[in-house]
Length: 286
Image 1 (cartoon, rainbow, N blue to C red):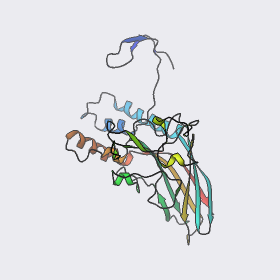
Image 2 (cartoon, helix red, strand yellow):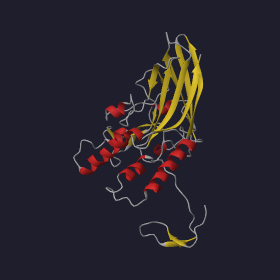
Image 3 (cartoon, one colour):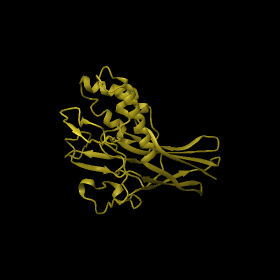
Image 4 (tube, rainbow, N blue to C red):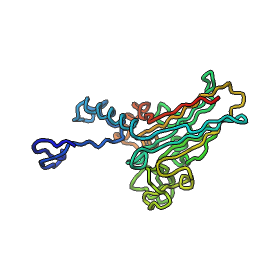
């Protein structure tokens, strides 16, 4: 980290000038908010320059797509009219993925097509409104998608996320009300032992009993019926990331406030670009 010459304040608010300050960057994972700030800079009185916010967005995306995770189709076999595919995900970060604010989520978009390009099976499609097709929590705030070891239906989606609950056990997006995790299957960093982890960082839900969900990543199986399909079959798997999920963006939609309406409007305006593909893998099954 190069040292800055002279004295500089270490914060913009009440920051005292200091010497020998090193230049450094904490690369975050929120690619959406800089875009919102840039698009509504006058209304929000944004001080940062347009090119600075654009550079932050581009650098964030570069970090997310280059240093976050890998995805591999480790097995793909057709037998007795069914395609069995196993995916292996490796977490390259030094923390749970996703980390930080619990509005973030990572999920698998899995597609199988025949030789003509006709879709035979699809799980986890990203919708233009920012929701995930088949995700229970996006359609019903009282439900959520469980952790899966095997997926065989399009309405089943593997989503790596924290789900919060209040003292009554009801799902919530209010941090001051949350006291437990009915589900926390965020991808674990290498070296994490879920069997000995303390409660405040523990794996919660079905992932706690998944033997393939371990420190460093996860392995999941997809079963797709292929009777009558015209092969060879094209398999595509994508690992998606979204810093503000649909449920979190709309959690206060039933309240009446100018600020709420404004934010939801911002989100809906950019919902179709609120998520990105971290990594992907393809395979042709004969």
